Length: 159
Image 1 (tube, rainbow, N blue to C red):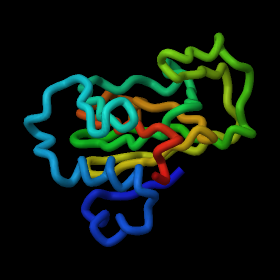
Image 2 (image 1 turned 120 degrees about the vertical axis):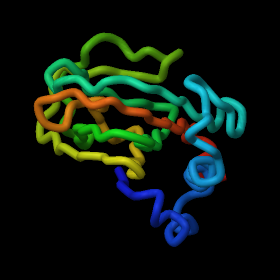
Image 3 (image 1 turned 60 degrees about the vertical axis):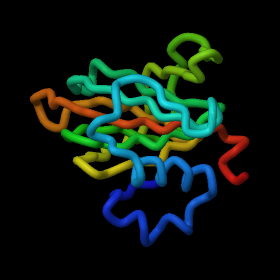
Image 4 (image 1 turned 180 degrees about the vertical axis):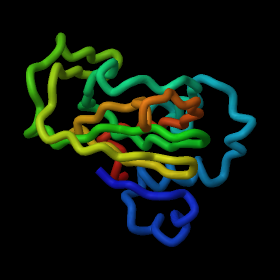
């Protein structure tokens, strides 16, 4: 897992693998305010963006998840949310079967979860070995979020 802010990314972008660079350049070079809700191809289905708007929920109502095929860059365009994270070694009981078409596995409980608060302009990079619980409230009240989620296939991460 890596955490950053888009304000600093021009100084850091050369340190990232090429797949992450492509996703971060999309965030830097695109008018995100006018980007419609839905999916947007960057490099076909190898790298694409998912734009969403939602209200956060209490942590207890969200499930922890992981992916096998894709890396996530979760960028907060507006609002603030908490994302719980843990290493795969902290995974508890699996909640259902791996859904290959959605590249997602859910977990019933996760030991040693760390809470990361993301505010406007921040992003987190989550690898397949990072369990995460996104879309959680910061504090007791829900927050309106506009998020751009960049999905990057593992096999193009360093190409």
